[in-house]
Image 1 (tube, one colour):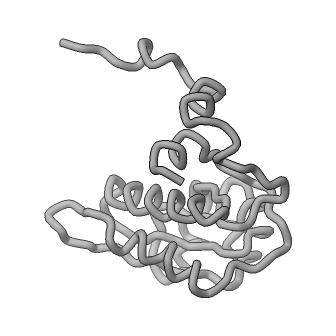
Image 2: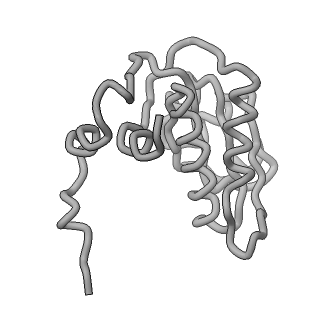
Length: 159
């Protein structure tokens, strides 16, 4: 799928099928974070794959997102902007493979730090969607029109 279709059709998903993600795709998702650009090329992040998703779930705002995921990744990074860039790349690469995802905010930073070994900037949950969606079933422009987003003219200002 082309990049614009991936961006226009990707939705945060919170309901995952009970299906594991193959190791080679987990590696590809993690590598998408690794190759992301970062401020001054510091690359000062760590991607922590958390196997105890039940424990991690208690540290985020919506525990079910993490508890039912096939893969949970905590991004540890002192620069929120860099963490966001890496997270978006990981989620888009996953979506390109038919794997849905959802970013999860940290509700209990101390609990997350105890589990992860550092305070995560964000937790990503990944899994095959419970209700599959074919991003190529319609043009990217149609996905864009159907998105629950403000009109472009409301968010773009030219000076």
